[in-house]
Length: 545
Image 1 (spheres, rainbow, N blue to C red):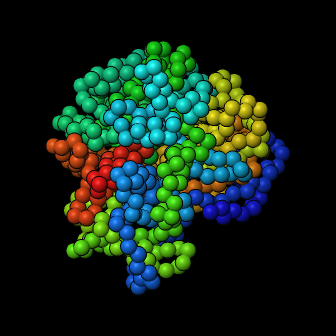
Image 2: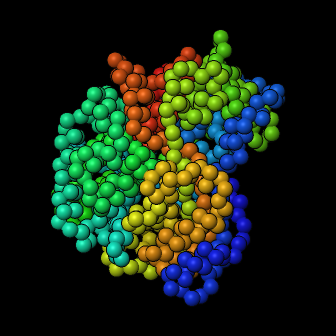
Image 3: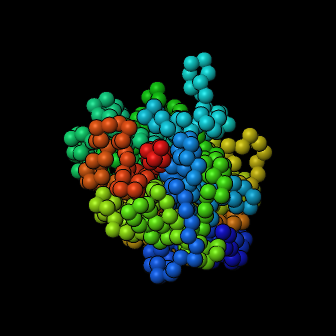
């Protein structure tokens, strides 16, 4: 998984150091691309392997195609229902999808999703999982979470106008007009929380005319119509959309932009009792996180599967036959085609992949694939041989964001440690590449064409603004690329894929079924977060019982 090369510092890195005022030549930085085998996915796309004859035929009762969060949740649900005769096929060498973890120089770090907010009552399947894992228990009539996994304080900070401040809403030196806009937006979100049901997972909320009206326009247009023009507020809202959806406020729907707040923690102006500014606690209360991010969760889900989890499997074809389902997969270890025969198949693949591999795709799948678009994404983990010198202001936090940059800042892999000794660490830097005011080109093409050193230079230049000593401390940078990381909830998407949420029977709401095929992936929510993927996988697995 670690294809590294030793390279001397390039001109871009030298430029970053010069910008930071450091005259010493930079140390060589080891690095490269890791985490995702792009060639495997393209082998499926190009179709060259489909003409091969199967070398082996295997049989199982239920086959799960895709080992991301939805596929792992489906496998867990089958086991809970007493169904042990199943197999799960995963493209990569480890399961977990966009929620896998890795190691850089012996330090665990995330390769993708890095936190799980404490779930609300609508996400009861996720609540049950957390109880099973010992992360949540009832004490004296109240639910309590394992403090070792709750994000330690300080949680968030923003580098704004030359210094660090607590929270992510810009507050230092902003005028009264900005604070008035913060308060107005908080009031608007509070009213909308009471007027309509925003829920996570989204399948627990019916699609109402009010939600469809918000879905029909972009978040940017809705903000303009409501008089929200403040630059600091719009930057923050754009950051939130790029963080959860991979695209900016011009690209996502008003429903999605409002859902970010109304479905979970609301929005609270600085100084409010639940605010996120310098005078109050961080806005994202109750966040569960681990050094390897959500890779900790996916590892707990994958470990009990044993040899039922088959990694390195490129699913090429899924066909529904008269008496069952037939699935062809290329085994990367044996370099052979394996044909699986099963009674039923849970297709826990991204919608665009499912539409390519399912023979004669049913109308519901073809329709979803025609309307869904995915944002490319990049995660770079940089190992530091020693602690950073810090700028004035708020103390080092778990989540550290730099105002006005293309990236989303970084999280510190050692933040959750109970060892206070200053030492080296790994910083995970996140860069969405979906359409936004920062990126208007083809982000997927950039991922394919740019060398890892170009991403290295971007990281060094961006993080050197608050940390001039970072380039001299960096020893290794490993870059993980996701060509189709997350669904973008564009205007109109809710109307196109939301009919499944209106099933009259709540037990069937969220199920996407066509014959012997059940579809389960966060794409079907148009919203790529753990709770959506897990719930859909769980529902699909339990339905087969």
